[in-house]
Image (tube, rainbow, N blue to C red; front, side, top):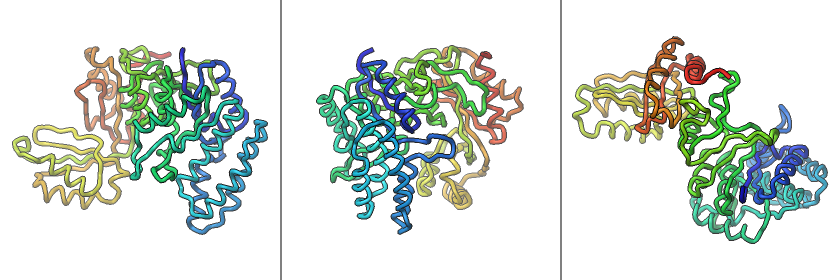
Length: 440
């Protein structure tokens, strides 16, 4: 197989039992030489993730609320893991440093990063691998912007001195040495960065699911697994809510041409899903690769007679939305109409004022607002090669009694997005899935 870089998520590092599974997986294939780990996750329903507790710890300290008991709970979790694994990495001393820094006003990023830092130290000792800190290697500029090439050079140089190493995910450093974290789930990004810097042949991302499914199993019963998917298809599905892998983790691996293999720590024999640049007809053996969607959108439909002859109309619409700091999901348009699709979380209570400004500054003849909307994306590179895909999709929604309020398809013909009323969201996904996927 060649050199393999692995990332193990929080569920894989939750307790001693799970960490022993990591060791079994790593020892099974000696090519698994560089390991990135997350902070310990939930051990059982109702348990807390270490990262959540660390953020809460920072909040208590910031608001002068008692935090000693919470700090002790976090400390005992790591002490228990240290004892269970039978290693000695100085957890008690590490918490003396954390408590001292907490008293000095340590940042939220620093405290949150300690989950990955301590997890990596423990797992490195348990595996007999070197511990390589991400601090000083994963680099951000003074404005917090991530530095891809500088990081690649620093990581590559550091890893060249270690045959086998465990690296904490999720964080890096600013020019002044301060800790800077990625967004939640950022250990996926660190894993991809390590894979690229090490020149890995494969980046394995181990989690608690066996790769991607063609649809949300909470909506579709026993959806088929996706064996292979292209970077482009994954980007489309991730954008619409299919979240197994942090979407920014795709870029470093794609840049280096490294395939990503999503695997299940609890079922290591499952081959999972391969993500690569190769575009196949479908990773599931059919016309489409997957279906994903999001709820809670508002569509603002703007009509103006002879809009197509008016220069700068759409620019004015976009400028107004920019003034309100509102990003746009999609802009379907016609000859005299343009619609803007906005996620409700960005719209908030701005709708009334926004409509007034749009009417006044664009001179629109009419504006209609459609609330409680949902978007559903049907994705597959093979769709462009098969006649009648759109007809089959729209026919399935018609048969299910779902009214389509919006249609958007990119020029690549890899993705058809439909807007439906949120009350029809789940029925629409089930109808589309049934139309394209043969029963197992």
